[in-house]
Length: 352
Image (cartoon, rainbow, N blue to C red; front, top):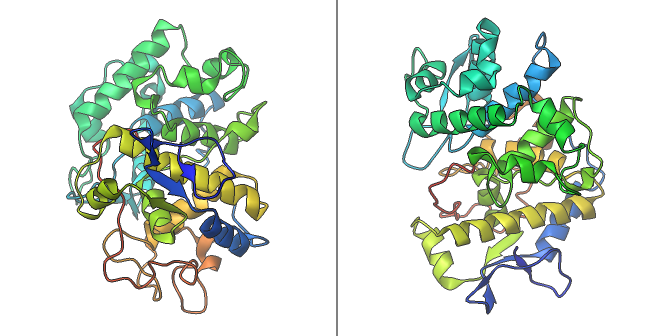
């Protein structure tokens, strides 16, 4: 994990050659963000659709399958995943969600491990094809492979529903044996050492009111590239290793070790801000950061001071954007107004 700038540690550190930290969490910057958020109304972490009419056991399967293939929906150098669902323009996760919901309402066998085990790349392309924009989903072959792995391993355990996995683990996220993080990591889609997809799936199940955890404090934030970009710009984390910083600035691919160090630092920063702000809900804080960063703190044209578009910002977060301004963190952000703000690191992965 990322070593902190102060002497008060959170959980650990990631070092280069065992000497210097690759990435640091800046507690002072985190405290400024925490103080800003203290007392503010942070919306609950929830989805735009509660999947009305779906049996509860299939809701778990819906999220297990969808999160498994939710990665790289706006990768650098590619057009972002987007299209129209029920007459509404959607993007990224929202488009994935809407199209799978549509397909599953027509054919609920799509939410069964036996069906996942048979899916091809062509099937995946067809599910997420948009009539106007065409095929924007990258690497359908890999996503089909992830679903087949999920289906075959569920079947090998005799599990038809995600709820059986939950009961097998006694509702424990990380405590005891077995626990949900360990068991999820057996699936190819969920074996990320920083647990992005696992935390996301577990939060979705909690927020749907279906699962409750005996060690809910173990539910960390599911860090993705939008949050990496936002926290690098906010300065809540900083890249201490010169060579790594140069790679990120030059948009050159980093190593797996670098990727884990960066994302773990963001994880630790969010945990720190969650505690110090009084919110004490890292998943809820993740949803705030994720929605604001992907809508406002965009890769190429961040809207620091003037809101030009809030394409993906749900209405419940609009109170953070007021008085004609745009990014609510602009007054705290050392990158606000920069002509060349840092972007997230480049790493080819299906973890996020």
